[in-house]
Length: 113
Image (cartoon, rainbow, N blue to C red; front, side):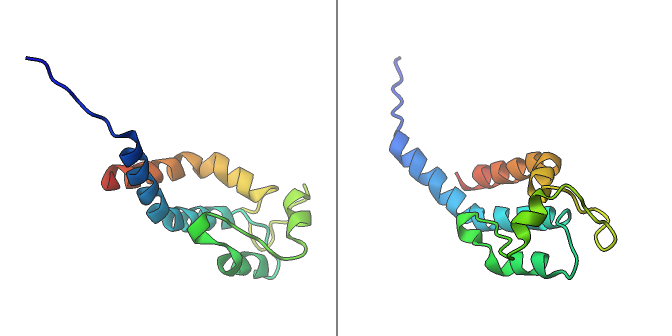
């Protein structure tokens, strides 16, 4: 007895997109929380403003202080205030937490699709 399976690729893409769109803000907030553990800190403004300036719905994490780019690429890192601060803090956090972020997204896809 033959079996025919029809696969609607467009419908699957649409369903995945909806889940990703719904999960995006949660994932962005999780990533920002992890990344800010390693963000250079003096007054706390750089970290605090990232909560305000970031666009979680679109997955954009933003450190918008005028000195942010300079500090990001400056290899010298003071750890007096934040002992876990790192050079290129987002890249460092990705190496440490990237697998966790991907697992989080996969769980969201598993729940929603």
